[in-house]
Length: 394
Image (cartoon, rainbow, N blue to C red; front, side, top):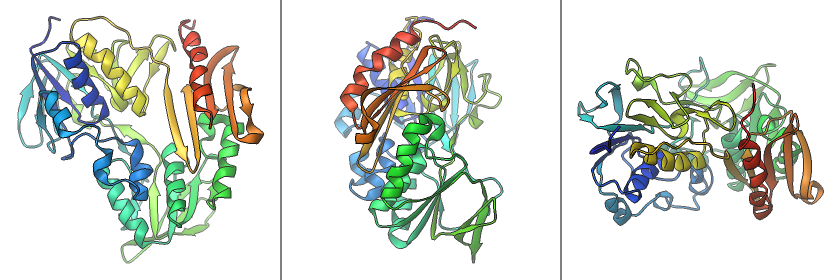
């Protein structure tokens, strides 16, 4: 495809903004339109479950760029007007207001939407956390309630539980895994994370599925577990994952299967690309398609997509990376380790709660996990990169 004269980016969060900025840095001088579902200028999502939720940051501090920085992108910003339909053949986006915008290239960066408990009644006091408005609404609820139940023991659920404890809330963390982040971190690290939460006063009701919510007069009063036990709650946060925001692409001609299906160039169709949480792309180093929900992936993919939009032919083969801050502990993960991987302590000592472990599977490095050792963990990233450089055989 020749260099486009007009690029449309659908999504105005980290992935969309990073794509727009990368296009300008790489020499694109044509028209640029950015369509965003939310009315807010681009903001950072990781602080929502921590600094913003705790009230340590005012909402404005979560903004990714200042007004002059956004103006320098030289784009037409269409915020608060979500995309509702797309035609891949004509690369035309229709928004809720009825506006249609077409581009020579379109980048899909619509992210993901939080999952909700199936079959649960619509009760006041039940929250999800994905957007800035979600965070502010939950923050207000936490100042009024005393007992919080967090449903979901993944990264988001564990972070919300940790933040709520700093606000002196009574907090119970619920989920089917035996420990927080057990599937991602494995027994050793997730076991230490469970200890950390207990030491800070979080009650762990793990190894249980949620059977439903209990309410009275339209407001939640508790969470019922699979064994019948009811956990009292004034506030409930549902953090059981997210689904890629692809409903608006139905009938568009873009392949969708747990995300926008892309090749190794993050290309879904001729002149159509996807970045961030919404994209499922073929990772050459892993030899399979993956979809990653984290801030780092959104910004790294944007650099490659911008280059490919402008005529390059670059594969996107990153070292997956995410981190989580809970209480006084930063945990960093490079790669895609699993609970069944073999682990070796390569730096520090778990007994001191400062360490790095290497994860391997069938002799191949799958990841490194660091606990309060950020520099040493980053230095071990190369071991994962070397493993990804060797394309696995099937």
